[in-house]
Amino acid sequence: MGIIQDTVTKGALYGVRILDLTRVLAGPFCTMLLGDMGADIIKIEEPGKGDDTRGYPPFLNGYSAYFTNLNRNKKSIALDLKKDEAKEIFWKMVANADVVIENYKPGTMEKLGLSYEKARAVNPRIIYASISGFGQYGPYKDRPGYDIIGQAMGGLMSVSGWPDSPPTRSGTAMGDILGGLNCCIGILAALKSRDNTGKGQYVDVSLVDSVVSSMETIIQLYLVEGRIPTRIGNRYEFIYPYDSFQAADGWVVIGVGGDEVWRRFCKAIEREDLLADTSLEKNRDRVENHQKLKQAVTEWTSIRTVDSIVELLLSHSVPCAPIYTIDRVVNDPHIAVAREMIIEMDHPVEGKMKVVNCPIKFSDTKPMIRSTAPHLGEHTASILKDFLGMSEEEVARLKVSGAIGL
Image (cartoon, rainbow, N blue to C red; front, side, top):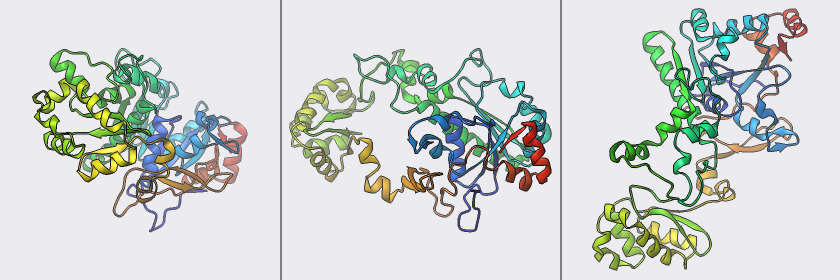
């Protein structure tokens, strides 16, 4: 099923053609966003194998929901890029593309003879993006890179968890997601730069760099104070109370982000005596005496339900929220319905399945799912014939040679 491009479904990136050589998560997440926003994504996969995530759970009637969610709005062409005939096809596509994106280990594309330098010679306007564990240069560039490595060496794991727990990986693959987001931002910036200069460029994104960047003020603590931040649970280093608190039937988070909010909070919980405590007068004092304050707040929350706490504090303009389990996330009327973060898309076998929607909202060029995730090589023949002008005979010959998969 090809990507529909009519006057109603054109996205913000309509007309941008992207050759996607990525697999697993960071790269496919990046191109998923670009595809949702209207770019034409041609996913280049290895014949007979394809993206590894085609075999990742969860499965719906044997078809990977992991793959289906990340690879919507894409066409699949199966090319054996180790074969010269397949490389010729690749270069013909590069000549008429806007972006090439890959997330192989640094040096792999050069070994295949598909480097940025060669791509630029074919198409000076090409934007060539790479996502890797440690980037394309530096002493660690040849190390393998996975999400957990990015979280480990970027510092995130060292401050995630509780004081008595070991370093903890975040509950989702934040290293990969941050890398995918940064690559998406880099590609969009490079497209804008090309509008001004007429020239493409290389975009180099590292998972470790992406995690380091996300650490923001945590790193500043060390740079300014020489103090190595450690695991402090859900408490925030710079504001208090800004933490999770146990209720009678679950957990809530409360974020008292300043002295005005502090006064409203104390009045809401009928503890105005806390306002007279000089050890809690300013935010800096409350951060320093967080243990005493944690106990006081927990005494109040522990005998109340989550919903009653949230309702009361929000009525006093105190930031507060329940800690949702995933079932509540996907059924929440604001998140799932009003903001359309959980929507239906076509499934290759079942007809319909629910997936996570694009988080970027536009007033006019609404991101949308135009097509389901492709079968391996589903669009090989149509791309070769419609995009490159090949005949049926040429396509048949390439199939026999093993250069393509259908």
